[in-house]
Structure formats: C-alpha cells, structure tokens
Length: 481
Image (cartoon, rainbow, N blue to C red; front, side):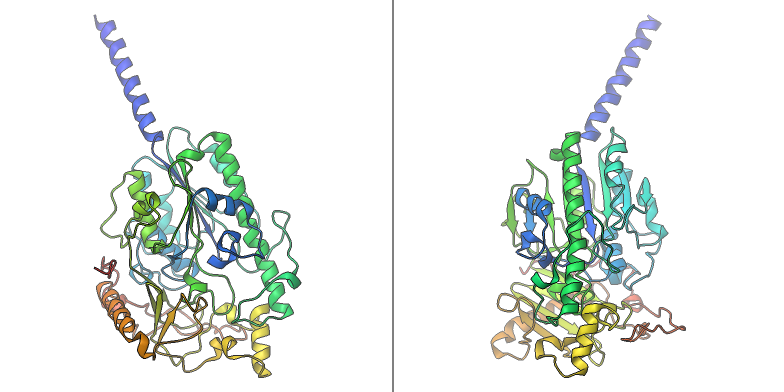
C-alpha cells in the first residue's frame, strides 16, 4: 500500500509539473527591438523610397504598423529609463542624458521575470546598474550594431519558460560603422528634409545613416528566420521601435515628429491582423502596460501609461486622444514640452532665450557642419534656420495634416484659437498631475557648437524634482471625454 501511495504521489507531482510547464509556455513571448536614433520616416514601410528595409516592411505588412506612435522624449537614456519604468522622464529621476535610473523603481521586465518569464537584455544599456535586477541575463551585445549575439540568445534560452527579450541595437548611432550586413547607399540618389541643406556633406551623412538603418532590418529578418526555425513565430510578439529620432539637426532631442515620432511595428501571426492604425500611442509608457496585460501580469500603480491591447485587436480602436513628450538637457540646456491632439502639435518652450541646440546640430558632424557653413555665408532659407533662431517662440502650434514637418507656426492664427486653448489646458493638466516644473538651478550646456566641452561641467537639479515628480503617479489627460 505504501509503495502504491508513493507511486501515485510521484505521478501526481509529475503531472502537476507538466501542467505548470505547459501553462508557462502557453504565455506569449516578447521581443522588443529598440533601435538607436531612427525617425519614423526612415523605413520603407513608412513611405521612404531611399532606404531598403525589406524585412521590416514584411513584418509591418504581416502585423500592425502604427502611424502615430510617439516617444516621451527624444534622448537616449531618458527614453529607455522611461520605457523600462513606464513613467515619464521627469518622473523617473533620470530625465537628462547620462543620468542613471535611481533604485526602487518598478521595472516591467522584473514583473515579467517574477511571474515566470525568462528575461534578457542584449545590446545598448544606458540605464545604469539598478535595472539589471529585471533580467536573468545582461549582455553588451556583439558586432558594430550590438546585434551579433541575439540569435544565439534565442537558441540557448530556457525552453520551459516564456521569454522576454530587450534587444537594443547600437544602430543607427554615430559614429557610423559599415560592414557587410547592410547595403551601401549612393549619396547622389538620396533626398534631404527641407529643414536641412541639400548638399554633398548632408547627403553622405544620410547615406551612412541609412546603412545602419538597413542593418537593423537585416537583424529583424534574422530574428524572424530563427523564430520560424524554432516553430514559435505565432507564439511571439515582435515589436520594433526607436528610442529617439535620427541624429541630425532639428531631429534628435527635439519634440517635433522628426524627433519623437517612432517607427512602431507589432507583429504576431495569427494574433495581430495585418493592418495600419492611426491610433495615438505613447510608446514608452503605454507599451509596458500593454505587454503586462498580454502576459496576464498586473500593472503597477506606479506606471503612468495605459494598455493599447484593444488596438491590437481592432486598428480603429482609440485608447488615447493626447500624447505628451519632453525635451530636457541633452548636452545643451533645454526645457520643452509637447502635446499631440487630433491633427495638432503644441510645443511650449520654457527657455525661449536659448538656441535650440543638440550635439547633432553642432558643426562637428557633416550635416551640422554644412548647416553652420551655409549660415555663416548667409545662404540658409527660412526653413533651414530653425536652430539659429533666437529668441525662439514661447509657444508653437502646428497642423500636421497640412504641415508634416512642423515648419509653419500657426499659434497666432485666429482660426486655431479654440484648439490652442484646448492644448494649453491639456498641457497645464499634464504638468500639474505629473508634478512637472522648470528647475530653479537647471543643468547648463556641457559644450558649445564647436564641440569643446566645459571641464567643470556637472548635472544640476533635474526638472520636476522640486515639485515632487518622483512621488507622482499622475497620468494627465488621456481621452477627450
């Protein structure tokens, strides 16, 4: 009898273990492919005829392409810290470039790990050591774009757990590095945005940039091939996004679409229907909430986003009417805030007396160099003089349906007075509810247009800190109802 009981008990435990393992592996896997410094306009599937991105175009055709996906800022480390916490940059304590995320934040990959997921980060980190607790493994990546060990990670992962991969490329970040994983572009065949100089230096700069954009495409294709080889493509959400816009003047760091509108593709065959959505998404704060819902994990009250899982089921669904973004110190002093509502983008500048600089606007990089040279010769047109405008407008309003590059400020137009008041009110509410404010001692410029650094430079008080932003869980307005 005792032996029979022991056999039965062993069989019970074995059956229970198998049931648990089956339940774990039935949960979806997630791969976030976070690129470095890529604007939405710079993929073929978003209508760019100059760049080759066939694998991403296929992911987009087979999944959902988001046309109105906005980042909470256009600066590398603040954007990543915002994403991993699901909080706005000024609510993280890491709102400025090269500031580490403080301890004791709720990290959404840690919630996944605690619920049974295998979690791994490979590639660009840039958030500080306090986030490492969210991952079973952390790798610096391999190769010029840091993507070189991703397939190996997928092959060697634990097979009895669902997985979450934070794959962060170094592409497309300066300084450019070429290899055989992407095509080389002819600069004479490329077009240039109207706010930059259409000259040989800028076109070559774009040719080198597009090479690295295409390298992200190569690895997007290799990931898909590996998922298919393992028979788990239908079990895995593939998510492609950027941390900020392209590293060119008036793009990276800025809160125009060229800086904060991200390429955003989510695919899972059999679960996400091929579609394009115009629904507004605040990527850094909303994606964590969405992944947690899809994984069956409760969202922390510390997270400020909302899930857009309903949009993945219905491309016409609406989860947001407002998205917000911010521009804080990134080598140069700044305090800009942006809200998108309907067809309008509203920008508020706390430091209108300052030049709208960032390191990519400086004269040390080809596109910036050509811009500065033409400015010194008086050859720039009105559309190209943005970064030289001082003082700058305290407020800007753009109709993106008519002005996709946000070049015509209609803030003084009587026709737009009603929408201006609505957006002012939305901005005031968001800043109030998230405890945002200009610092009484803001971080100064680290370097000038010539790239020469101040040897005595250091971070000062970050925005929001004096208003209690670290304690705030406020979301600001979400829906206009």
